[in-house]
Length: 378
Image (cartoon, rainbow, N blue to C red):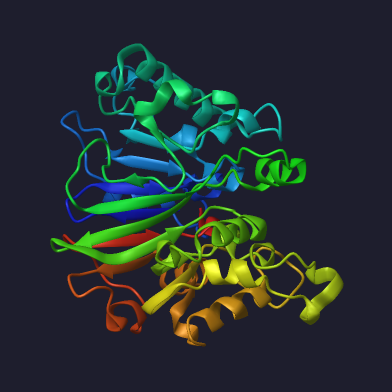
């Protein structure tokens, strides 16, 4: 889960994983992610906490758990009084979320609830147009769907490589985001189509975030669980002409520091002889000076578990010039500090002192932030 608090006070939430243990008052081990999140959010004129945007990278359970318990779904007018649930002013969703429920695999109940709410909002747009919906009813669909399924929602559709400048229809110069994936490929190559269907459901966004009124002070790359084949395709498509599209100051490792993001070779078979994909690594190594890589995962150990994978961690550390302090595992950080990892973006950018001091974090007061919490802690 990552929360971006923007220069103009708006916020963008990317994924959630609020486990039942985090909601249990008798559980002293799991960090109370929901309370932490709600304490950071503003309330509207009816006292309801809200996020300006909720981006679901893809509908796997560990990216959407807790949705029904902590977020209001349905018309804002039907909000249960004093429930404390969070209003989602604008959803950002891949169209593949609608297809996966019936074709690729069974969705968890929270993912089904997301899909139902997304369809409700798309229907409102079709009935009344993009400006006929208000906060709590809005949606952007990220990426075209096949067979012309998104042809009639152009006003709320962001095509691959397209730009987003507004959160909940507010254009304030606080950020811009480029949609790198998902993408629809018009091809007769069945193997390629199957690869995309299987692996390309994750939304990949590269944000450029302002701070103190200055643009592009932090570039944040987030890519859900996109695997090696997707990063290869994106680099082959854009790397030569647009390498800057992949550049970052902060990156969340795709798929929780999984080896499968970096290589086609099975670690269980090849071990240390497994080879890293050159194109995938290029896509994931376009660092700006002092860049930091964040792995949202449980503690990383040298074992057969994947994700996270210790060999993947080593590759990411090499990407940040071998500086272990610039690779941060969120659960390890939270275990040591009893709070989420929090990075400050100021007019001078993200300084090494702010990010990599003793706490590797900074308290935030009215400036842009990126806050991440591990799936292992709620």
